[in-house]
Length: 101
Image (cartoon, rainbow, N blue to C red; front, side, top):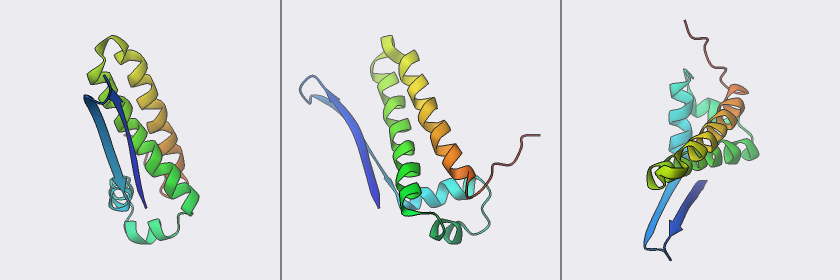
């Protein structure tokens, strides 16, 4: 599965796109401490794979918009953080985050 998200402004003169692939899902699982990211990924429902990867792509999209539109950066970063929280909530179902400390 590949998820592509992006934006364009000024009739396509300025655009951005990001593609999140299943290898990125493996990286997310590894970053959370999964001992065998491939085995964990195999146990994730197709719907959750889509939702996790889409949230990751959306977060990157809003992060890039914050850089593109500094006047709206606060709102774009807020949306970025919402998508990261959604991604983390879904990942927690499969690899709970270790408490900081």
